[in-house]
Image (cartoon, rainbow, N blue to C red; front, side, top):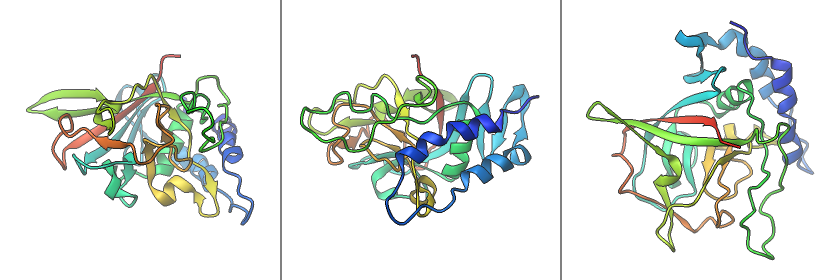
Length: 246
């Protein structure tokens, strides 16, 4: 089968560089280009045209990506829904052993394009932007659906991941029509999500790979988990990433 075109993927990565420029020190050369260049050697062919990269399953035809995770905490104040297992695991529901850099490569290979357009449409008047808004190279290429899938007594359960947390004031889950693939940033350490492990943030975090556009996303003290709907700790869970409806 024909693998995704790497030069295009490299071009689509450019919004991250605009989003993440630091005054001093100058960022080191990012390693994501090397990972993209190495991807054809690392990709494993699976049935049905699917591919595997570092434990991540991707389908170039449907643009569906599957990430293996597990439940770490069921009840706690949160800033994240998913971090890499070496990340901020004291404030997340899920963890994963996969490399955030591999996930970034998988997203680029399946033609998602990072951006933050629409992230702050609910920001209160007069509140400063927590991070710049950057348009994706492809219209709506940053909009994704995030779903969690797990097994209970042999039966598949699935929910939008937004159902797993709530506003601590209203005790209601946020209204999210699509999550935003903001793509993290490049800083002096290289790819920031690889260094910090931050994958899905519930408040505005420019170093996370995905951000919520929900009202209140400028506050890091507003969000708590919804233990009533979260499976027991250590339960294996698959995060499914798919294109959002425009």
